[in-house]
Image (cartoon, rainbow, N blue to C red; front, side):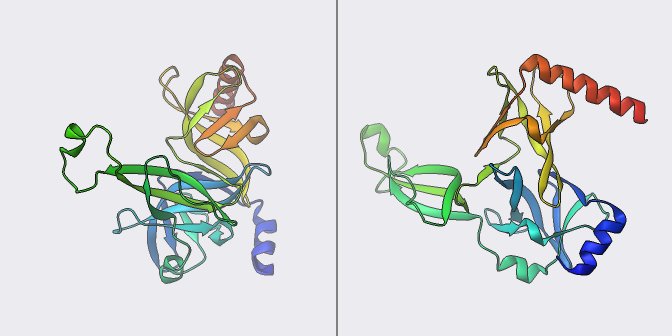
Length: 236
């Protein structure tokens, strides 16, 4: 951040930003892609990177440091302080590994494996191969996300559970202040009325890849949702 940025931030109040999954990400000279994942330092409850899927390039993404996000006053998009060309030179979000069943991507001193998807491809490529050979030794193509060591990666599909073991919805995004998480935006599950609940960061007991565990029981979460709903109604 430059001194001018800091002065503007002080004059206009803290830079609170909503990182909503699926939100458009734009650079100073054009659109880049959509927010697919948020990478978090689970100990500090701080966003470190944005996982951005590139427009017109299916299956390709970039790992964008949160420091590149800038405050523009336009909450409809996430704005970056770089050009599209510069963003395309950032580290790739996805990697491919060709393994045998039971193997996992090799460890790296600087990176961990985030989300991963595997597709088994029988040797020889015949679709009916497994039907006639129940114990083949196929090669597995794994596409995985590469995240900094010790980080957790969350998507909209990531589950949120209460301390008493109830799945209560998914991660819709985060409210952050200069990268520091102030609230998790919970997208309610089937047992809840449609809508969202803002859950304060100090109520997050555990954050790991694809899962958040709350310090709240399901009844405490319902009470919080009711209180937040009442606060919202009073502000109208």
